[in-house]
Picture 1 (cartoon, rainbow, N blue to C red):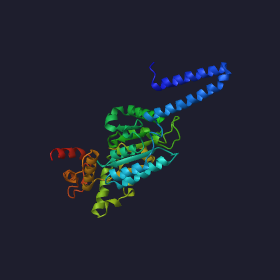
Picture 2: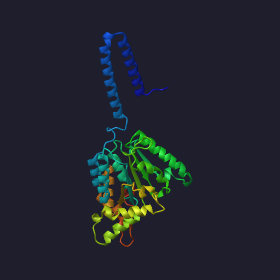
Picture 3: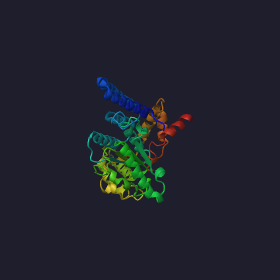
Picture 4: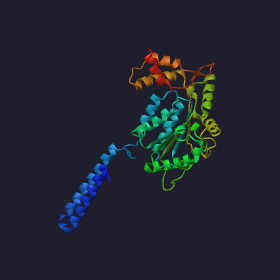
Length: 343
């Protein structure tokens, strides 16, 4: 059997402590020396473990620690056109992480059209909780079309999903689960995790109350767009839109949409989703901001004219007013590369 470095050191310490105890039994005069050596070795072991945890990710504060200021700054400076999202996400995550004894896991459902920032926000949350961000072994991402592609395998998927969640939360109570493409998930599948999101202290000896579940979906996007369009046509500012203008209609539309993974799900029926968070469709000015930010992220000198050119060539809707971007910021990065190469 091949021993790891940690196992080798632990075995050595155990054997040495055993020898010291045996010596103390037959030579009383050396008892104080043995005890002293044992204390030194115990301290050494504790130090070794701390050093080990410094380099190896583990479910401890060194690796999992919420940075409220960091999240607030990221939402303010890196997310564009989503004032409702920024406010709700910051308050939801802060309130949950500051609660030492939450009654249930935090469940967020992010809704909106393509390229409006749903995946990006889930990444920002991860970066400000886990030291390794999205590379953390305590973040688990599921994509409907990749992980649950076949209708005929629904029962197997349910069993696997339950086993996976239970195993990972057992390993680290502060795990995060991200379910992408909920609008493409088979109806009824997500209901299998309902017990893990409910108000139970423990299930089979495991507590899920410190975990975070995030659902990403395009469903409800039309309702969100219609509200934004109504505000625009009424001459009201985009920033006047509040969560209350969208949340109820959004949850009902998702619940009654047969193309949604939330169709008639008990998660909504039992009010287990803490926040339905609407992502507004993006306008021309937001695409320009995305382009500038993308250039900065690539280490390039921000070029307003280039970003403006890319934004103006994007497709907008409705056809008559051309206010909102069809793809949001989703293809900005690749288009910047194309435009730069042909400049």
